[in-house]
Image 1 (cartoon, helix red, strand yellow):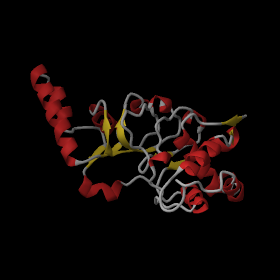
Image 2 (cartoon, helix red, strand yellow):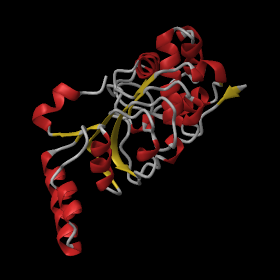
Image 3 (cartoon, one colour):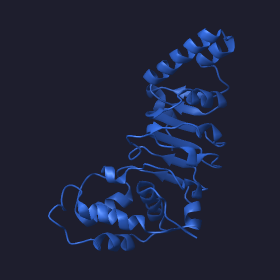
Length: 239
């Protein structure tokens, strides 16, 4: 069975993982991008144009064998990814891999990456609407997760192997989830400003309810997890 992920940005990330592992031949991808030539008046160095859009549509149609998708362990979206460099070198453009054309707007279908251990959305995880994390629900192996932009948080507590969560550049729709995960033993990284805002909100809630147990949770008492500020982030950076 072959797969095409609904979101173009996610599909590019999967192609990048297969390209770097050697499961995909770069020459085949270059040929696909070259098939969109020659340049039109709006194409060419340094920025993206119609040829980039056509190239990404064609690459989105490249089906991925389900067995190869299941073998992917790490997925990331850094601007220096090999797939972006290949596309831009072939088209003679230079966005540094930072074009919004590469953004990930949906994780639908990511369930097929059953071997995924690390997902890093830093680089192309920004969007104007919340990213639905529901497709990650119950993922059996995901242990390292870095989020950016607006995200729904409902699926986070369902990840049995989650050990490291980075939300420094993310806004969760339910910030208290990060505290509950820390209490469960997950190392959580976010900024001190966000942490203090969450703590104050929890303290106010606890005070209004008059619950001593809630006050203890708001003060950061847990069972081995950690909420890591920026100054200590390098010690707990996801791999």
